[in-house]
Length: 476
Ligand code: NAD
Image (cartoon, protein in one colour):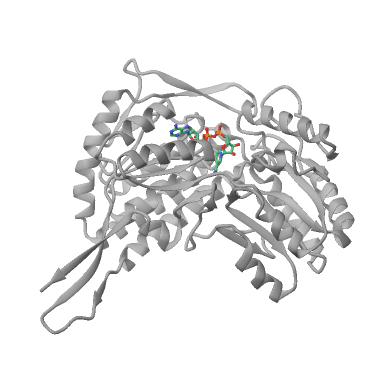
């Protein structure tokens, strides 16, 4: 295995570390051992990054669309070339199976390729007026963007922060998670190597609350974009509001999965079991509350439990591993508390329920059934390898339960009834609805939530437009 990559800040194109800066230890979640240390930006570093972002914005927004497209396509090619080594370090820091880590990084290249081409499709419009007059609607990049990414998708979350901003012509300062820093550094470095000015794409680390307060207090930053918990999202939205900065908030979810009696049950089982335990359940769109129509409840439950028990848990580097460790000890603690609370309230534990061993942060794939609505886990995002299976009386009750929580990120349904699919599309409160599929993400489609799951979109045309503002030019 290669040595762990150097962990550094990237400010104004310069790799910075050491120099008496504080640092954060990076832990391998499969062993609990320290594998590296990431430097914290000082206040002076952050001020330097802000000044650079202001300069970088002027240069990058005035770079021609063709040139920006070519540079971002080159960055995507570099990310593809480097995906194996980026993926290896990502697995060591985050734990997910290496195939998923490399796949996630290649998906970043695909997303950047889409964004690079989308630059050519940023249109305005001309409004009809009498001869001699003209009204033109133009779109302009909003200004320097500060992005804060979570640890569950160390490369994809960062690309979602920087890709749309760079395509729009904005400069960007991104703070990947200190727990999983290497992929974010590598993606920013690939952009610089491809020709994005080092002033226009920068990477910092630190105490998260201190870095975000510092950057958001500056009038230079005109937009904030965050992936993480609803609690932190609300806090950052308030900081953004103080200076009327625009914001994209990609926050937590608690996805309902409606299994109707007419569904292809085997297909639903194969797809949704794999999905529930992907990335040890640490996915904002993880299928969580399974709402199963009564006639097929027992069949679905038994099939689900059988598949959950068969999942191979182990190091992300073992080729048979389907599920790695959780990313941190606090994930394990949350699982323990939520499972204990649900059992006390009468939920039935049908699989798993315990951490595995005492080295690293491994947890068994877990299934709870007949979980009362007042259990914490029915109301708060578990963000772990657990599925909740509940029998339901029928469509109306299922939609009501799907919409009960303040979250609205992803929702899933399995049914062969096309009229019902139309009703669900109209009535389910979610940013993304998956019908007879486990997939809710595509480079050319918007990704984002409603209600407490946040606002604004990443990916798709919307991901670029989220970093642009209209300007109407009236000509007499
Ligand atoms: P968290 O919100 O505290 O942290 C998520 C990320 O945000 C981390 O990478 C952290 O460094 C960063 N962060 C935290 N406070 C910040 C601040 N003040 N300013 C800027 N960045 C900040 O969440 P967590 O403790 O890592 O996980 C707790 C819960 O958050 C999970 O159980 C899950 O519900 C949710 N979560 C959601 C996502 C998602 O994809 N939407 C990702 C991670 C966590």
